[in-house]
View (cartoon, rainbow, N blue to C red):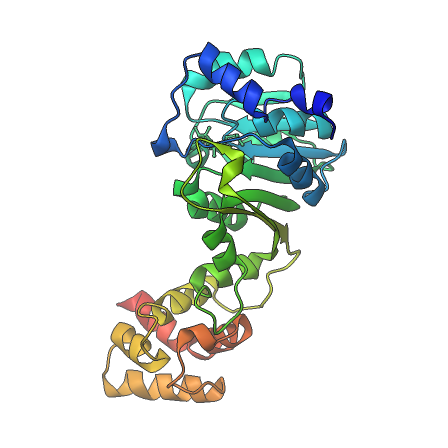
Amino acid sequence: MNDSEQKKYIATPSRTNEIIKRYKLTMKKSLGQNFIIDPNILTKMIEAGEIDKDTCVIEVGPGIGALTERLAEAAKKVVTFEVDTRLKPILKRELADHSNIEVIFQDILQANLQEIFETHFEPEDRIVVAANLPYYITTPIIMRFVEEQLPIDTFVMMMQKEVAQRMTAQPSTKAYGSLTIAIDYYTHAEIAFHVPKTVFIPQPNVDSAILKLQRRVEPKVDVVNEKFFFQLIRFSFQQRRKTLWNNLTSHFGKNEDVKEELTRGLQAAGIDPGRRAETLSIEEFATLADELTELSQRETRS
Ligand code: SAM
């Protein structure tokens, strides 16, 4: 992108500073307001999400519209959620040239996403979630999107580098945990590229990464009881340094019949009770959850 092409975009130091000054905008740290000022990062994001005129986009947090205008240029339609109503006049004016943007001033966690899909998109539309996420609620936002049965094809999201690493970690690493497994269950996850803190105003304290998630047609593993599968993972990681046996007996209890059931289940799943949760693959957790279904029923009864 040459200089004159860059100049027209909001995501440049000159235009962002001009907008901030004109509207006397003070950025709210509590809302994770760090605005992007590098148009090339946004080009790479759009490429990573394969966003084209057959794609409709849901964006979270347009801010002053840096990513939104680029999405509108590339996509068929953009529906974007912003919680900060002070940005209303800014977005109205700065995005006035784009007729394919719908700004909804609402907390994304409160939005009725099913209704949004029905109202704004056609069943044949390819849907992508694209966002430079407010870092304080990255995980709840992503989990909301992936857990609801929504027809989202791909996610391209900027987030704190460490969170992206947790979402793409391999077993037996420090970053691997219940979040990694939940993401892997629903999606193929990869870090598309890293982003330095210098491309934001104001600069955050952390480096960032663009995470790309592609929704799986079917969850990665087949389990009898999905709720219990996720509970078992949570219990197993309760205290990372403890063994699986210690975490599971802390949770299910130490009486003889529980111990017997745990021993039988672990053995049937071929898992050594002395291992730590972080060494188990998603497939091993799935087998173990199915073997321990009896305990899930006890859980429900108690
Ligand atoms: N997209 C812009 C950019 O890339 O420059 C701004 C990104 S900024 C990191 C995050 C944006 O999310 C802010 O505009 C903030 O007000 C908004 N936001 C924070 N919490 C939100 C929520 N719960 N729902 C919707 N938007 C939210």
